[in-house]
Amino acid sequence: MAYKQLVRRVLFRLGKGDPEIAHERTVAGLRRLSSVRPALSALHRYFAVDAPTTVFGLRFPNPVGLAAGMDKNGVALAAWPALGFGFVEVGTVTQHAQPGNDKPRLFRLPASDALINRMGFNNEGAAALAQRLRTLGGIGVPLGISIGKSKITPVGDAVEDYVSSLRELYPYGDYFAVNVSSPNTPGLRSLQDRGALGELLAELRGESLSLARQHDLPRRPLLVKIAPDLSDEAIAELLDVCAEHAVDGLIATNTTLSRDGLAAPDAGLADQAGGLSGRPLAARAREVVALAGKLTGGELPIIGVGGIHSPDDAARMLDAGASLVQVFTGFVYEGPMLVRSINRSLAGRPGAR
Image 1 (spheres, rainbow, N blue to C red):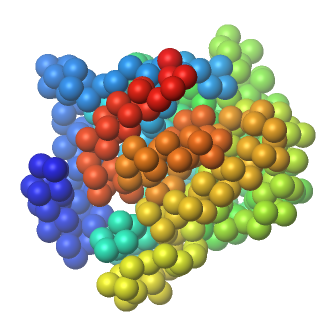
Image 2: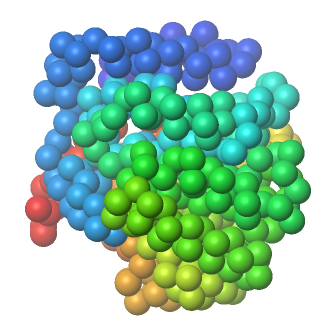
């Protein structure tokens, strides 16, 4: 409650003209906090909840993760586990550093508990992230790295772009998410088509096996992040490709181009280009998770993301078939108590370990 009454009010006022300012200030503050060990220890004692689970061969201290996009460049990595997250996903990172799309590119829809973004994979590039992770070492929870296509790279050359990022970052990620579903990079979603996705996954799988031998490491799991706007038939075809190339998991879902479910006060922002996240995405994200679980017989682990703003939302996502969940927009609107409350609730579920 204190977060909504004080912290969120200040942050939303700070970023009233451009919410990206509040985002940048928040990450910068957490970056400073990351170097203050007593503060991190105190936060961890309060927020961390032990609800361990093992998914695609990795042990997670709890099933609630930070979605990609919040800390693209991994500058505040020590802070997220202290706030209770059981895993953290950085990125989306591209082989080439890039500024992203023109500002403004992030919009709040508070009546709908939603965001629209068209960030465009703004990041410092794979080499810069690798250097930061090399210096940092581990963070105590699994670290996922989301990789995507550089804007300057033609879609026809996308495979080498992804492979180059994987090669650069392989020793530092516990799993890699292949982002082919952002609506904010021209042509990117075409990589979800059978032929293009098959070629990409074949190369990434082969490179992953080679890199694991080269670095004397276990092979890192590869996950595919998909769009909620695919038809059921397209999802089935995508899952066939994932099975053909022994993909380790799915992240469902990315943001949506749909504007269904927006509250009336937010209607004026419905025409803004970009991907919508938050509560309006919740039902479709669960549908995609449930469909993927059904089509794969529950054999393919799924990270469910989209519209998780409460413990009940998280429980419904897990009941739909997800093995883990991620939050982003819910964290913006509800604050760090959301992570704690979800984990405390899940730890008390029948069958929880």
